[in-house]
Amino acid sequence: SHPAVLGARTTLRARPAAVRGACVARELPEIFAAPAPPEVAVATGGRPHTPESRAKISASNKGKLPWNRGRKHSAQTIELIREGTMRAMQERAAQRKAWMLEHPEEVAAQRAQAQIKRLARLQLQREQRA
Image 1 (cartoon, rainbow, N blue to C red):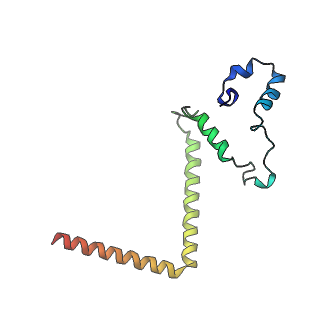
Image 2: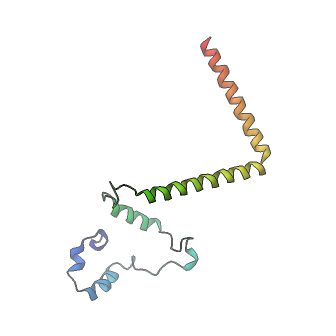
């Protein structure tokens, strides 16, 4: 819980700009350690956060309001969201259909099990009415 990590700006701003970076790096060597090796890079081009860094980020964001709270999406953004959602739903449906074609025995077993459950539920309802 160092002041630089918690966002106490007075500690750093009181020092000259040239000294600030070096001073923080000296006081918090664990934060300014060498970057992770390139083989850890994720698909988007960055590197995944360690559990410790995720915990620090989460702790620092507690109680802060998001920058877009209370703002409405523009019509263009709503359309982009709609298109992305439709695309994802279609991909999911296509994946499910492909799986069903590859595993016909499992599909038949699932359908039979669903039929048995439905008939058992109907029988129970009939008995409760009588």
